[in-house]
Length: 111
Length: 114
Image (tube, each protein chain N blue to C red):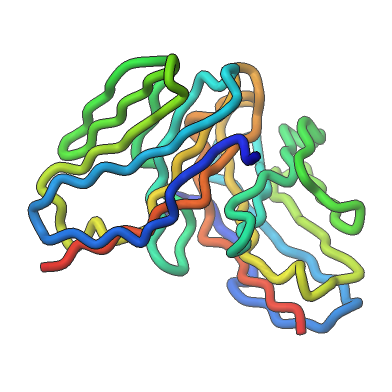
């Protein structure tokens, strides 16, 4: 079993829709939770990170962490065609240096 | 642009060969991380260097090695290449030794082993 599981999609939504992306994990020691966006043939770009549980909002993006369920989510409101990319969740334990990534969800926002 | 640079962008080579991938971290960053991204495995951590010293190892094969130089650039050496080594190799950097939440990734090197 992988430490981080992510539905690979692909996910296709119309412009303006609310998008929900999710990851589950098995290691209860994870404390840092990140979301990266990766455009085709580019490196991952850090979107948001949260420490421990709770919500974090940044513009149209909201990240949620539910440590009791070992489940994290990224919501994108008013999705735009420019949001079309692969979204990767990543996690880490406090004091560690490496990230554990999900396999990514490919999102397409249709104009 | 993350500020992390990687060369070359593309590399095509044959099985059994050796290649070197290069990474320059963002200005001021002391930590460099190497990751491999393949279709079936996703992004996997290989190794981390901090200020010239190896600090963490992940799923790095014995055929692979890395180093970080005094000017903080890093090189990943891949030897005795196999078809399965074909992947995207990313370098990331951060300021501190342990700052998992703020790693900035370079554009990657796409390696194709024929």
